[in-house]
Amino acid sequence: MRIGKFIARIAAICGITMLAIPLLQCSRQGSPKGTKVGVILPLTGTLSEMGQYEKQAMELAADRLRASGANQQQLVFEDGKGDSKTVASAAQKLLDIDGVRILITSTTGASLAAKPLAERKNVPLLAFCMGSDVAHSSRSTVRFYVGIEEESQAIVDYLSSLPQDTRVGVLYASVAVWTTAINDIYIPFFEKHFRKPAVIEDYSLQDRDFRIQLTRLKNADAQVLVILGYGFEYQPIFTQMAELGLRDKVKIIGGWGFLYTPLPIQTLEGIRVAGPINVFRQGPSAAEFNAAFSREYGHPPNFDAAFAYEVIMKLPDILRILDRNGIADLKSSLTQRGEIQGVIGPYHFTNDGNMIVQTAVGTFRNGLIEAQ
Image 1 (cartoon, rainbow, N blue to C red):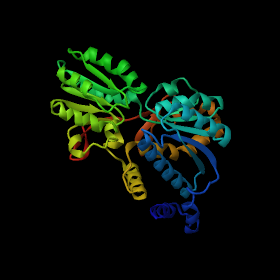
Image 2: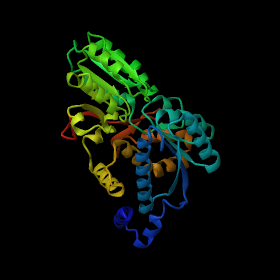
Image 3: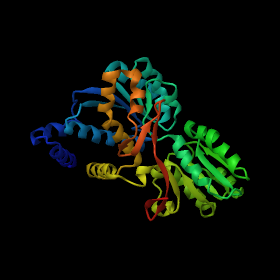
Image 4: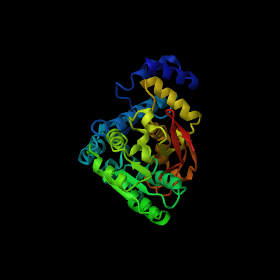
């Protein structure tokens, strides 16, 4: 019933007669005609929460496009399960059997697994991942997501305001995007700015016992702790921090994992988080999207859902570029768009196809994030 009300409202705005509404309401259950767009998300497995939010937002955007009379796209979803081999098989199926014209992937690992297959078929890949390398070496892969460089820079800017004798600790998930950021961004900054060496610890996403790493951080008298991860693994980390008496001894700052984590409000109090500007200062389009998403699904979106919504809303424009100029000019055409205003705030694309999103640092206060 919620989707019917949402579509009816959009229909009224766009001047669509109510006779068309029943057909639009059935769009998710049937197989709507239109350009096929393949979407590989982690719908099950460790990262399933991320994938489910993305899928919901994409379906909401597709419904809105159909209601507005924009070019129709048929979204063909596949479950990548957070596994590179599964992603590669799903991409092969979407490209060879479904004949999709555009491929969308979520996470760096999935994007890297699908990229050579998409390039072989001359199909553009829109990658939901933080790593910039996925787009650098490809003429047709576009990163449609906030970059690790922007998030890291926001955190580094905060750390640079601290005294030079501060002891900084880092706890990060040992996946490629954060490992690269630690080596290329954080360590050079630590060595240049702080007199005391940083204490850097990593963990596997399968870990549930973090006491060894946390004890090392405690024994090193870390005063500030940078935590970089997906968020779903933070509950045992913070429970064990409290057991070891570390939680109250350190100031904590992290990346977008704190926008995902199921940690209770009282645990998050005072933690600083870097993220896209729309998380801290929502414009009218972001507020409208949040309200529509909440009405449809009964819970608010996370920031990841906003990116998923944005990419689907931009599909008609991307398809027009492909029809007019071909895949070879996709990146240059997106760059020429300049600054774009979307539900994720202002963004633009670089010449190598990386989305650049304005980022900021906020602080959790009474369950809300206050921009600094």
